[in-house]
Length: 617
Image (cartoon, rainbow, N blue to C red; front, side, top):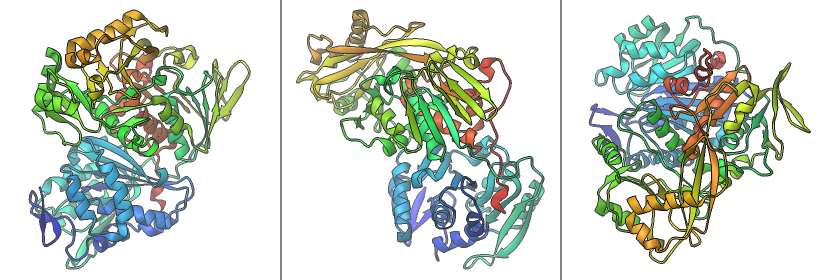
């Protein structure tokens, strides 16, 4: 728990201050920035280089903001910074804002962090700053769970910044420090504000050469160290210069944007005459994060994807009530199975900005209509216009669109990959396929277990009564609040059906779900006659996990997002960009392994490990 003493944040849980009462800012600069010689190392970077800092204990984010500030002041403009940190007990929004207000010179950076902070979820979070040059990966979980999921040899410098070893010994255990060493490479440095002998001895056992140096303020000594054990990861990271992305839906546009942000020239190829012509073309889509109390790998992935999607939308499609609305979303306990799932989730602690358990009375007040059931309230949920998301993602100077071009062949070349069609042939160093179930028509993806799933939405005229609906309602179906006199409701699900005709029977199914689970809304709609509808074909895979990652050297895929594409396309793009550029992934290793397409193609393999830049010594 955070308390305030003499205007400074204090942890009552650990009985320790978050930073020096003399000057937290100068302490961070002395201990962590100077202790790791970051000014010199950032200045020595070249365009395309990436530097990775690892931290134990995010706290107020002061260390991150100071590293970000120094990076922008000293590193070349086309270099990038990855900052990985862990935090078991995140500070709430109000206290974090108050803590960061102590350092006015960091105000602009602090505001950017606070904007992302409201999107945090338990588990791993990935946020972008400085036009994509700075990436923060924050694992909101115990350090002993987070560090084993880091890629080996991925960190160039460590900020070891748990509370005092005497008051928080778990943060400084031999097991934790061994994981710090595993994620290090030859030349990785570290800095710690403490000089406790047992900490130094544990680091030496883990493979670090350490020394005591003058500390900050009243602390006479601190510890610096360097990892000298040989590691296979050495030399500069090599950035690809060009890439092909096949498929202009949410998955493809997200990948194209993630690669372009990293300086890669992208050709985005779409068979239709415009982007978002297939399953991503619905007039509205809802941000629906459904997960279970057990939090298995799928549910952990969905949770991370939800937080990432909200932050990504903040960057590309601000809330305007026309193309995006943050009206909240209610998951109703309208069936026995849903009531059981929600009941289990209700026994856990959740950040109130993420989800809240509500009864029927509270749900009714939120919805604006009488609800027969309570459920889960997602305050940041809502709806977006998927084609608008695709258009914004594709609006980047390094993305070239090639519309009306169906890729029929992918071939490896001496310099990378060639995509060919009836009247075109385009080459690039790397290629990413995001063309849903149609990917199976390419030889490299024929073995993937991809399945078409037809889904139809219904556009329903609103009435004066139904116009009172304030939020998205979800049960076995969903309905969004009216916009321009129309609700969007859906959606059916028919496996192994790739037809896109609009069917009367599917309209009836959508309406029947409203009647069964949202009776007040059904009655408010009156004599429902759908104004129109749209059918699209999603792509699914057994197990409901998307297929994301490298298929063979230089060839990647982002496929099988099913009904969750609005949530999962963005984080999938981050995974591919990280693998392609050999940089820190946005998710833990076990989730990356579960997403990998290789096992589901009957092939062995592992997620690409980021190579090191040798710490830019």
